[in-house]
Image 1: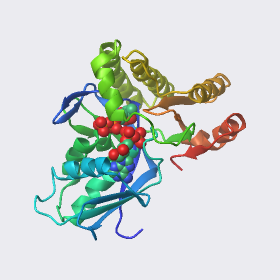
Image 2 (image 1 turned 45 degrees about the vertical axis):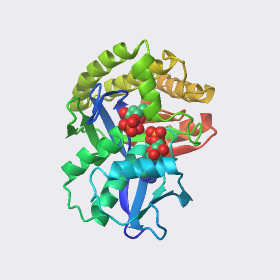
Image 3 (image 1 turned 135 degrees about the horizontal axis):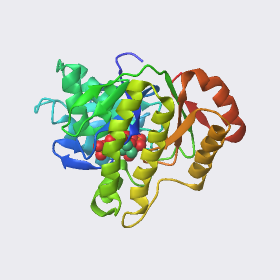
Image 4 (image 1 turned 180 degrees about the vertical axis):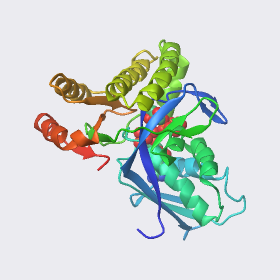
Length: 303
Ligand code: ADP
Ligand code: DP6
């Protein structure tokens, strides 16, 4: 699509779940993610043909709350005096289903603003800007990224070639956004403090495991970190969960395959869908085996 800027989804291996500061946005714990190159958003900005700012996702006009959220964000780094604009975005990733549309969408929006308003920002500057729109989006600028407690973003590397697939439980918009959910957990979860402690340790262990290219260790940390994050939802008040019976069935499939010798691990974000981490070289065989057990949609994220 001509003139569109691309932003990519990313999935955290060590999650960001809680803001230590909202302005600037700083995470409680350092976190690490893997970018998914074929789950993305494409965004273009045009002059609005009406006398109001507009925002479309997949040709669907967004309501005032979403428009205001986008405009409030872009007003932080675009000219104060400007004509009304129309933000046109297409998501190949399901929107607000726990598959990181906020990251891909925010990255694409920052790049589109850079083009339209001729801001001439460097990648580093855009990384800084992006996290004020959605924290996790700052990691989408790098294949493997770490977002640290002081707000800086580091590019990491690993010798392994990862693959990720999504066992789709539900592609619908979630009822509670990541932002609202994490804030509720920060405020009320009885396991929030222990989550932060664990996540800080997981971060150190994950960096080591990536350096050593120890896939088993990477997978184990990924799973236990996701489970600890999700525990903060059930221990919050009121208690809630993003996971459904089908999410648990998907997790069981991954465990079953692992007991049969397949190297695969699960992780879940703010939604019911289950992502499976594996080594790229195992993709074909693993996909074949998972397809026998999971009769719903599977998305291959890193082909
Ligand atoms: P997800 O799990 O998909 O990241 P979130 O609840 O964290 O879901 O974020 C969903 C929000 O991300 C949407 O309500 C919208 O504000 C933003 N978003 C989604 N797609 C786009 C897009 N293409 N451009 C800009 N923002 C987007
Ligand atoms: C569960 O980055 O969407 O996906 O900063 O409020 O926009 P805001 O939150 P967001 O939260 C992501 C939460 C997560 C974990 C992760 O990606 O690290």
